[in-house]
Length: 605
Ligand code: F6R
Image (cartoon, rainbow, N blue to C red; front, side):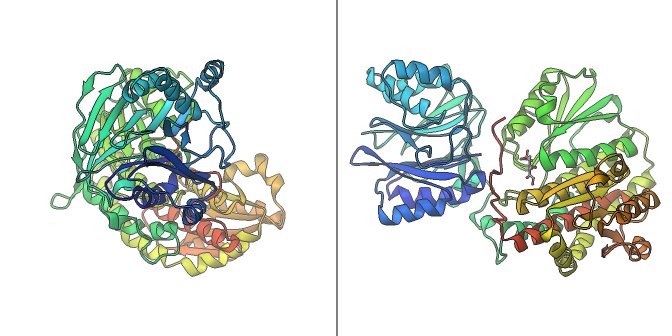
């Protein structure tokens, strides 16, 4: 959701900013721009569309300067045109912004009345014109920035550059992430540590509601009242090498193939190899009366799977809702409840809003997060980290299975501590879990069969996914992934629900993809598939060896996965449904890693 970079260097700033924007492009790719100081004057280049378009403009019309700011945009207010691209600038100040200024209309009116002239349709330009107004009134850059920041409502991460101030940059964050990087006589601002990975490993994660004044010598941090605050430097473990494609065609393909490693790493974090016990931070599971689970998108489907597990294995009552709904629903919450939040980025605005609602209602907040320096991490009582590493493809893959891995560990510990799971059953489930990386590696070998399935899917206008019970959310994940990256309309239904309406959609052009290993309600699901087949639907199924015996006579294509314990089947079956979406998108020729209209980290409501 928009990427921001700021560089105060002694070398040419543009190549550094451009490469950092390349690493941030996953956050938005509707337009991009860079501004620098050239002999004290603000100069900028902007382009609609992807960063490469900006690269072309810079080739024809280079930009010098050692201090500069850059932006890659996911449009909220105003179409993704060059005119609306950041940086927004006057002759005195240039800004880049991530977030939404909610009071922009009132500010725009006030600024226009004061004679300020808007050149874009964006909410962000109000920041530039506000700071500009205060500069015109004689305030110093620091005072102008501080006064302006206190007028803004909504979410923002901002970097500001001032004319004739070669050794100054101001950054601010409120509800959107911003970090400061410390180099050797160089300073950086960035939306995340990935942006700055090759530049420095010395990072300060700005607290929410803070702003920073950078010079080449260092950084001074303040709260919004203007009081000086501490912001410790940390050494990030992120290495520049973590962000290549390693010979794969797309990040998504690379990340799909990282499933076994990521699940294994995540298990290593929680399972003590000598005792064969799962070790979690101290949580009193016996006194918990209810868990409220919430997240967005795929992370929400991970939460749905978590609900099935926690209810069945730990007999813990669970409510689950999409974060954008929960945050405005005002549900009654038990005194001894927990809030269980799931997020790859830890910055998703809706999930963060729901976290705050749950926290204010006295829930103990447990977050399953991939980015452990994120805002959600700081605001949670307990963080359970997923070791998925950097995920760059906009559509999540490996982070999802890492979330499932953590939720599975949580379930087993909760089940035993609540006295609902015998040690023998828990051990059997844990052994199955430890076996998952190998089974997933086998599932990845099914790519040729999945490519055959993708040929049918890629021709369809509509695809239906079916699953039952704990595999229903896996069907939902498959449908979402297909929609996101191939732009084919897909929906998932609980198999038993088909006959109550969606069955009307079925005709011979509609592939029906089902996730149906032998075991849980197999016969009932097979009956539902027969009903669809009787109406001309094309059945494509993912099953196991035993299920295949029945399904081979019914379905047009059957992909046979390794046999696993039912406890871990949601993790295993995620891999082929995600791979199917990838293969269909390849056939469709879409932009797999950066699908249209999407962004990786959704920091607006
Ligand atoms: C789907 C996808 C999104 C995210 C959702 C939540 O492929 O990536 O649906 O799962 O935007 O993001 P996080 O997990 O960062 O909170």
